Amino acid sequence: MVEKRTTTTGVTSVTIAVGGRCTGMDRETELALVQRLRAGESAAFDAIYVAMNVRLLTFLVRLSRRRDVAEDLAEETWLRLVSHAARLRPDTYLVPWLFTVARNLHVSHCRSRLLEDGIAGSLIGLWPAGSAHPSPFEETAGNELERRLEAAIAALPERLREAVLLVAIEGIQAKEAAAICGITPEAMRQRVSRGRSALAEALDAPGAPGPTALGEATS
Image (cartoon, rainbow, N blue to C red; front, side):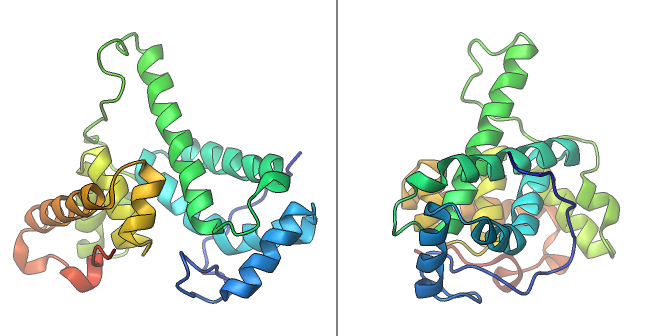
């Protein structure tokens, strides 16, 4: 059983390689961490939790637009890691693995919500197009451009929003983001491109962040 942890908002000093691109931990160290997770070492779980919890929670808050939902999904993601640790492949890339689990849990949550609303029938597989209510990030954004950007991200159709969050915000390569979402790399690049175009249009060009701010869809 995983103890529920207090979430911090700062940037951690430990990070994990994303698909071979080092962001603070080289691949050899990551593989050693996977081996320790497979062996059931609690210290290995603590290390990856410290490295990734803020990123996962931020992704899920922006994706779901509800902090309570995001916190529940993040906690379930960590429970999945604990329960599957012994079955991880020795060559597992931990960041894509965690984001895949988190994203799939969110998909399941959306489907359950549709079923509960009694409208799932022909709508399973469709995605909500966003909400008029402010997201948690909109409410706390530090300046006008940040507020506009968060509002524009929140208003994106969900499929475009998850693509932008994974590739442009989290810096995950399009090929890996495609695997997370179960689509082709080309489809992912198209979604990112459409999402970035929609953001630029929503932000009304002059104040809109360009490719540097929103990231490039790389293969």
